[in-house]
Image 1 (tube, rainbow, N blue to C red):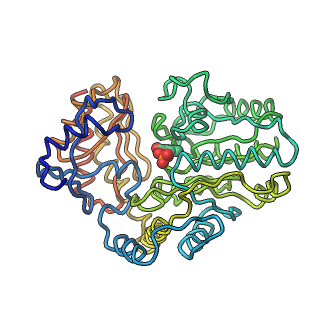
Image 2 (image 1 turned 45 degrees about the horizontal axis):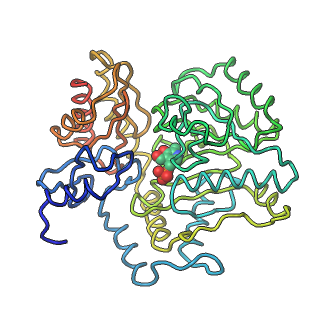
Image 3 (image 1 turned 90 degrees about the horizontal axis):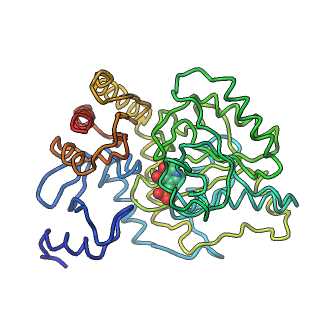
Length: 429
Ligand code: PLP
C-alpha cells in the first residue's frame, strides 16, 4: 500500500483495525508512526516524540539498536521459526541458560512462550498441575492482593484488581480467587506488622484450596502504579512456605532492571517457585515471554498421572525472538544498566520533585526508571495526549495516573522533556 496518504491509512485503521481497549469503528484517531530510532518516534506529519513509555515497558534499549538489529538479521538469515515439539535450537537453549543464570537462585527450568498473559497462564498451569500430580486436587485457587494487573486472558484477568480494574466486566465468568488488600504503599515505608498478620492468616485459612499466591513484586503496574516495601515479599515467601502454597512472581513489567534491581525479587533477596518474564525480555523487538520454575515444581509435575506440562502452543521458543533476547541481555551486561537506571531515577526525581505542591497532584513517586504523578481527577485522554505531544513526548496516562518508564538509553535532556510533559498533562487535567 505504498503511496497511500496518511489520512487514508488512518481512515482504513478506524474501519478495520481493533486497537487495545479500542472501539470499533475507531473513535479516537491514533497517531501514525512511520519510524522509530533511538528513543524517538517519528510521526507521519514529521513530528518527533521522545517515547516516555518504552513501548509499554519493553523497549529498554530504544529502537533500531544496531546490536539488536544485527542479531535479528543474522538469525533471519539462518532460521526464522521451527516447531518446538520434538525439535530444538541453539538460540532457545542459550536463552534458557542465560535466564537461569540471571534470575534468582533456584529457578532452573524455562518455558518460553509468546506473551506475558500466556506466561501467567503457564505459571498457573504449572502450580495447578503440581498439586494435581501430588493428589491435592482441591488446591486450585490463587490468592493475590487488590490493585494488581496480570494480563488480559482469563486466568490473568481473574487475579487483576476486581474493583477498580479493567476486568470488572467479566465478574462472574472468571475463576473465583482470593483477594487481600494491597500492601501499604511506599517502597521506603515501614513494613506493617498488622498487614503481615492479615496476610499470614488469610494464606493459612485458605491453604487447603490455594495452589499459589501470585503478586507483582515491588511495583503494581497497570493496576495503579503503586510501590511497596520489599519486606512484604520476604514475609510472603516465609508465609507461603509454611502454609504449603506456591509463590508466583509476575515480573513481566519489573524484570530486566526497571526498578533498579535486575529483577524486583532481588530487592527482597527471595526466590519464588515460579517467575514470569516478558516485555523487556527481547528489548521490545518481538513478542516473547517466559515462565521459570524450580526443580520442586517440575519434579512434582513429573510424578503425576499426566507427567508432562499440559501446554504446547505453536509459537514457543521462536529463534528470532530468542536471538534478539540474547542480544538484549548482552547489552544489559555490557552497558552498566544499573548506572543508567540510577541516572534516570535522579533525573525523574529532579524533574518531578516540585510537582508535589502543584494543584491537582495528589502524589509523586519515583522508583528506578519509573516516574508517576497521581492526580486528584482522571485525565481526559485526548487532552492529555495533546499536552504531551505539544511537549514532544509520547505518554499514555490512565485513570488519574500520569506515568513514564523511559528507555534506559535516554539522555538527561530526554528525561527532562518527559518530566516536563508529565507536568503539562497534570496542569491541564
Ligand atoms: N503482567 C504484568 C505485570 C503486566 O504489566 C502485563 C502487561 O502490561 C502483563 C502481565 C500481560 O503481558 P502481555 O501484555 O504481554 O500479555
